[in-house]
Length: 503
Image (tube, rainbow, N blue to C red):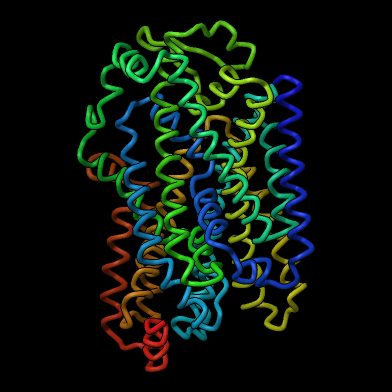
């Protein structure tokens, strides 16, 4: 990495830490630390939700999958775009209202306990356990992405790169909590968007224009331009099913809860979906035209960037497909711009890790520590418990990410399925059906999470190649509905539900 690139990169990191310090001075209680006092504007909420959602997957995982497998890997993007739209359209406003009506709930476990009047705390504890389990894997995926960035950019070993990336992200999340996370995500979302637009445009220009770029890809491998080539029905269903995950992602749902008003939802939806669709296009075209660029342009200087090229059936490929965006950033742009683009990749990674760490720390502080051990804990005490939890969870995630062969997409898909199957049906039913009960919710969460673990870890082949979120989501929906139908919710819960619906 050149001096100019390095300086640009460092300036960005310092800026993120300054935002964390500013938010630290505005964080006085647990509601501020976990939910920012419910005062996010539509733009901040939308870009924060998008940035924390897409993570390094959008700049590393998806371009890498398209680069290696062609447009057949784009079905995931279609499923995500549809799922995100439905989430904003049907969940955002209702969740914002009902979480406030339900005793001003500030976390998802907090909301579920208040929504169902669960004085036993079993729903809160189970929900918090699921959050900690799957967020540890999710956070680990971000650590892997960060390590790949630092490894490729600074010529560090994988282990050194892993620890540097982790320390930077932990620092501002530890300091500023939700406000720091949301403000940095807003900046990072803008940076990611500009990077995803700029890289494919410059790449296409270098290849001689759109038609020349498409023709070059077709001559190298015609199947790369075909979305259905070699893709079975199960694979398409599995890819589209990623959209189901949105309804159960705590780090996205909490942005809906933090909006300053339910009236802000339409504007936030427009900003968020627009950002997402254009970003997905940028990621897809980066991967697609990466194949043409590596095989038709002069790449003799790539070894100076630590990029390894291998030959597969006469076609030149990056040894690690997930580094195609990093490679483009370094070889196509002036060192200062390259530094900004590399900062955009780190933005994508940090914006998700910080959100995951924050939700996990709130689960430990609010849903374990306060609920089970220190009911009278002060707000300041809970904030510091949350901060210590951030460091502890991050450490476990770093240890899980220690394998250099780990893939960002693989780790993300497992955690995404876990949250979607465990919480998705419960969130939807809790917002639209007054007949759902506490017992139904408990049974559904357990069945959904257990299905993902069993299906993903112990079953393979045949119908079991279906993405585990599909059976997990369906079984959760069935079990929750059946168990809830065996009893009736208390009258005060029904009245609260009707009150929220009138708002």
